[in-house]
Image (cartoon, rainbow over all chains, first blue to last red; front, side, top):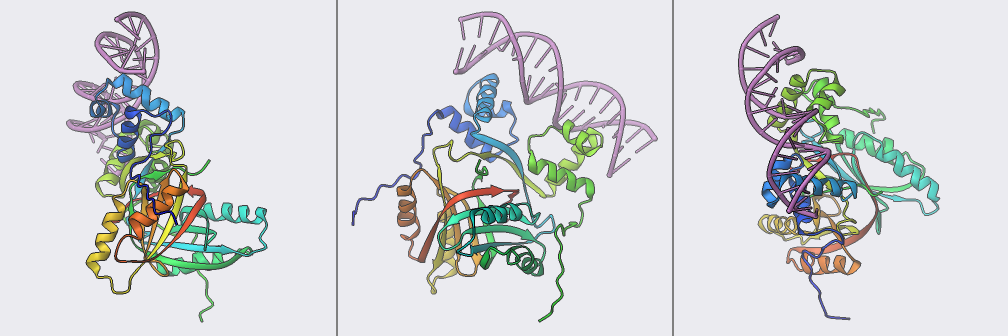
Length: 168
Length: 168
DNA sequence: CATGAAACGCTAATGCC
DNA sequence: GGCATTAGCGTTTCATG
């Protein structure tokens, strides 16, 4: 086996994004409501320049949108869980897609990951009680014909560094 | 076993949040940069009322912050993965906490879930190449003394309905 | 492509109901 | 608590270098 290890902790200089763009992206990722005037001061350019750059990042889709982050506990959904789902081997592509669409539309669902490996899906939900977790799995996941198994994990702690855009 | 099934698809009326608050939260979750004037028009109150409500939601921590959502592909990180991590049985609480703190600070990391069940952690990362995935697991996860096993799943598709605040 | 100037629109505070 | 008003500030456009 090749022993070479290439470590690239901050690897990326995306094509088309210069230093100024990247600093703007970083700042708006942390505080999406920072005023353009503050942003301009923070990166050391004129407000009109910061504005043009930000507009361009939005137009190019690098910044996909802005969102309020919500304290689920304060919203009465103090319990979060991740549910690993495996589908039946014979599931057709249509039924898999239909499953994903159905799940992602449910109000308890925060995120859906379609993955390869042990599980086929990971579903991140926020609800009020353990009974709600069970009801979600029983009524919405296991009830689907294409579902083979589920594996529910309660979330004890959660940390988010960034907000990833949904795949297009 | 009790056969009663209680289905509560939109279950929550958080204490202290009335309809107006909830509609504001919903709208700012979808578009965190909506102007206060637009928000007021959308919910049918005066701009000054919408402003007071939004300020209150921020002060109470219901809205934890605002963030730009980023197209990771456009940033040159076109490959996302979820890594399930199990820790060694003898790991002390201190070492577990230290592991979590170390991982969450890495620039490739988007989210960290501390869960109960098969895995102890789920780590959501975005990188450029499959080699970067391997390097991340080898150099940053498996290299930790308290880690017993890892299980890497490539993300084929991803959908996000909301942005959850990190646990406080 | 960044900038300064200027018109426009919004925010945020105040007092009133 | 909601509302109208208003002063101050930020945004956004545009001509210029």
